[in-house]
Length: 268
Image (cartoon, rainbow, N blue to C red; front, side):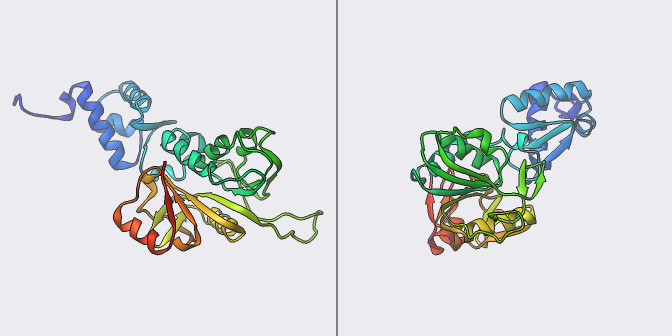
């Protein structure tokens, strides 16, 4: 037998885990069974490898498999899965976003793990009026932070733990809608490219677009893995935002498009 052969079956565990991580990154989303067959090892071995790679932050362990920590396969994953991805980057973005919020102001926050991080970063603020479709945000906010807190109604999407519906409130059941406005909309998006901001769900895109329309200023929140990508549903053109808050400077192509659209890029 050729001693220099590098068949998958003969790889040392460390080498196998490196190959496994690369395979998940390339594929985006895999099952334990697929990995066991591909690498010709037991399911228990694959589970141990995935658990270790998850602890190391290389990939995200899911029920029955794993997803890449950076691929588009995450866009429709459950909130609890996405909360474990790019956590440090989201916290840094959230701190910058919180710096744009004045005490006593009115803000809107959409669904997403980055806006949950913003809610936590607002802990030293006071007298805010907050409107959101993010069902997890009320549990993240101290009562000392807000004067009024409103949650938009609509259909509940369990995968995002958010509502999807009109950005509207009525004074009485069945009554006319109240015209609502905010000082700042903080909108976490799925992707940013030269054409604008996008996300994977049409209903979410409609809500984000309407929040932007009702805001005096808009800050788009997107970690650097979302830059240079485009998803199914367009939210708005680049110029509809005042700020893009991200964790690292965009690549020159995206930076040039943002500058032309007069969007100020803010990084930690």
